[in-house]
Image (cartoon, rainbow, N blue to C red; front, side):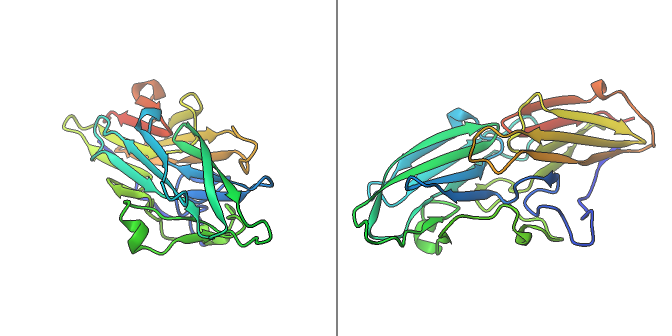
Length: 261
């Protein structure tokens, strides 16, 4: 048999990042914002499982916010598909958004918002983001980033894992498992930013472990991110060749089918 491993904080302080129990170094949080020098704003949004054809980004007619939705299709034994919604924008009345550029790669969206300042003498612009469905723009107060967000903030460290706030359908957690009828175990691990060739799977003393590296791809990135952790436990403390484990890496998600021993 092979069993899933329940997430346990690795240190007394908790997880390195409460948004993902497998993240061990690099930028924390599901989203990150940075104000640029040219009146633009950079946002990094983790959308694991979303392919390029599943992303939709459009500028609202009000020119106050951008609508970002993503669909991560159900794959193999996933419990369901996942749908994301996030709506970044500005709260000031002196500017309007003039455009945006997007780069979706390996389950990470990098979004740059451009704006026009109609009142240069004022400089009180706030960037905000709201996660969920479009109706949440009215039902939730915006989370403001006046000067940017700190992806190394200690608030992202703790003993309790958080669900992705931008997932409004499907699982918002980074780990999912399912026992298959033949005794194998199916596992989904979110590692947003890791290319399909930058991961390893190993088995030692019956513990199945994975690692993944998310390299820097934009000069706005804070740095690389590294993922590592145990995802399953065999019924006996044996080593098995990693090639016996079926792996599929796509769009920042690693999926494994681990055979029973």
